[in-house]
Image (cartoon, rainbow, N blue to C red):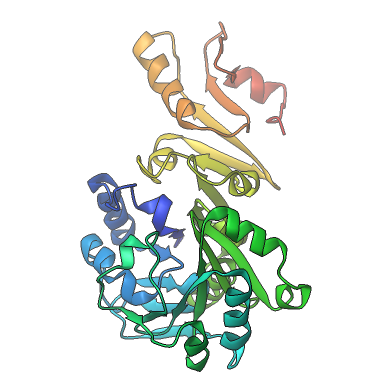
Length: 336
């Protein structure tokens, strides 16, 4: 049974210092070695993640990544483009007008470059990089650009939210305006988002959607988490994402793999999940701590069960301790 794990990059796979823990790297390779798919899904263009792919040592013509918020599906070595979608010709004109109207800085993403008329101090990561082109002539000059994948508005959060609230309905019907983190508002076609990108990848790989997992942290991950068989949010995620996630895993400072490796079972009935640990007995103190430990790393409110053959049942940390034999004999069901 082949499985697919898709993860966001910034705030999810990457720690705050933009590194990836060795534990996470080891687990990625363990997953790939078993024949499963590990895929990065990011709003970044392909040329902005190559160093990360190198650090993971997953660059070849078999591994895949999703870039530009779902607008590009490509092998990690860049040799095969499996899907590609750009903005319509002329879209850049009305988006530049919008940036001028609300006095927003603007980044235009093409295949090999990010083009802007001005680099704000809030965009330190892009300063001095060869992939960035500063165009002369102000924002009006950006209207001449073609082959645009997406646009990013940059300003203070207050300015971005104020502008988003005043965007004309006609534009909202054709574009997604998604807050992707402090000082950034991304603009994509309605037919481009991470969830749509995941669905396209599932079709390409011919994988059962029930065997797909997605992890994210921000608003642009909402569609991704909703589209997966099991959608997860890291504990540092935007509250909006936590509301739609199937469950919440550890923070980006820890590891997206930690939770799923430690809990014995995660059951699902429709949209309700239950976490299950099973042990012969927990009368020994060390065994008791070992069995409860995974539950302490789960941050959502789905039921947690510990099944043993003990006759003396505990009440601890909200975990439902059941005698397995009685549970089966009485034909009980897990709580919803």
